[in-house]
Amino acid sequence: MISLAGRDILHAWGKFVFTGVGLGLLIGVTLTMAGVYRGMVDDAQVLLDNSAADLWVVQKDTLGPYAEPSNLPDDTWRAVANIPGVANASNVTYLTMQVSSASGETRALVTGIANSGPGSSGWPLRLLAGRQVSKNHYEAVADIASGFKLGDSIQIRRNRYLIVGLTKRMVSSSGDPMIFIPLLDAQQAQFLKSNDAIAQNRRRISQNPIFNNPRNPEVLDAVLDLQESNTQVNAVLVQLKAQAEPKQVAEDMRRWLRLQVYDREQMEQILVGKLIATSARQILMFLVILAVVSAAIVAFIIYTLTMGKIREIAVLKLIGTHNKSIISMIIQQALALGIIGFMVGKIAATVWAPFFPKYVLLVTQDTITGLIAVLGMCVLASFVAIYAALRVDPADAVGG
Amino acid sequence: MQAYGIKISNLSKTFGRGDTAVHALKEVNMQVEPGEVVGLIGPSGSGKSTLLKCLGAIIEPSAGQMYLGDQLIYDNGWKISDLRALRRDKIGFVFQAPYLIPFLNTLDNVALLPMLAGKSNKEARQRALELLTVLQVEHRAHALPSRLSGGEQQRIAIARGLINRPPVILADEPTAALDSVRALTVIRTLNDIARDYNTAVIVVTHDDKIIPTFKRLYHIRDGITYEEQGQGREIL
Image 1: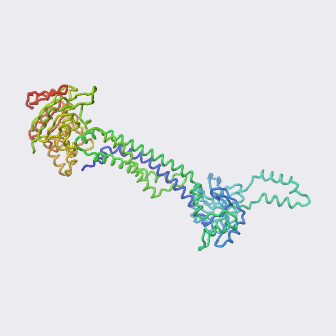
Image 2: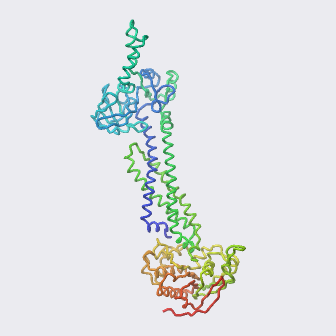
């Protein structure tokens, strides 16, 4: 039996291909939106992977350090390290800010890493070029997505840092590249006040007779020192011994240290389920709208193509063509349009994904789901055209 | 080939009911023998198209009887449930415009019908090619309809109507869009087919060029048919 759909497509291939390309670009946008969501989830998971931690110790009653602000005294790590099952505990600070260099500025997650050496929690896992931070001050390792190069000098608050190493896929949950600097510098940067604010604070404290007692001038110095130094970190990253049970160790820390502790599963839930949940719903809405728009376009195109052949369909019915042959022709055309559109969409999404400022992750599972959804959508969209075709009266082929 | 003709007795068709009822056909009688070509003529609104649709098993008459050869197919109700198969196997249609499927070439336009009837592609195309040869358009077998002249298209349409060797061919103004020469060629072809395949052919027409060629004519006016001897002029 002749493939009526195939012949019709070959006959008007230009119209079909251009329609498929138009639909494909829309499908490409849909796939990209799914890729943006996958990228966000991947960014969150990469952040957790790269921290190389089994537990995150944060301020009590907070979802810190990524989803909410969290502050801990910087000596908390000592108590944490003494809990049974803990192999290593490291202080860490996180601060999202604009970082500038001679070539421009970028938004980055500045991460303060403790002086515990490469391989410790919080440190960059792999370097593409250069070396790890080896001094206590003014050196930095940057993710290549920041655009900085080895030897660049970058400005963080009042200080300049030399880029000594480059790393890759070290990003925040929102996709900002990470810049690693020594913990002391990061603490200073995080809590640094302006000179005017410091001077104003000194004046206010020195005017307080309780602190500025002429009989005991050391009190004023001590208070001023306390005001101007920072002994806070955002979290303590914990690596456990091989045989340790994360949930048990976390429970011990909660009980004895009265701190909030999250294991990997809980932290993932916070990042994916809470931090990016609104963005995910936003993207889901876009996906639904794009799917509906795509379906409407396919329905309109197939309906228009079918209506353009109404006389031929009447003739086909008159000369004895079964309805199932006509239905098959319409569905085949809809599916062909869907396949052309999907191929174009997949190619387009693959080509333009690297140009997006944030990570777009196109996964095979989404591709397969997308293909099934597009084909299903095409079949559904062809129902209007099928309904119209089945209503065609064979008598329409005869005049009068 | 089995010899068929078509015969209708007291056939009527009424559209609507009560005061708004329109009696398109009123007790129409007609008989066409195998191998015979008859003309059906009448002014606009006389009921020609309605009669053609009833004869073609496209719309259901309101009353009467219709025979296709010896087979009673309508007796105040269809006797055959599969009208689609009846149209496909027993009735050939030739329309005012050829209505060829634009995305199929000439050969496949003709071969489509036997393919729909379950014949293999090879057998269907072979039969179609034979018919195109008879109609002298075999050299256009692989051309799309848009590449054919009006006369060629109409001959292809006739070939499509004939491909399943139906006992009856219904032609609805087949020469309306053709000039005199091509119109007479089409009528000659229909006569040849009627003779060679023993087919009953009914030609609905207004066309003064071809009316003198019929040996027998049916006039239809206000839903009633009147039989008349035609001139039966020879087609040169």
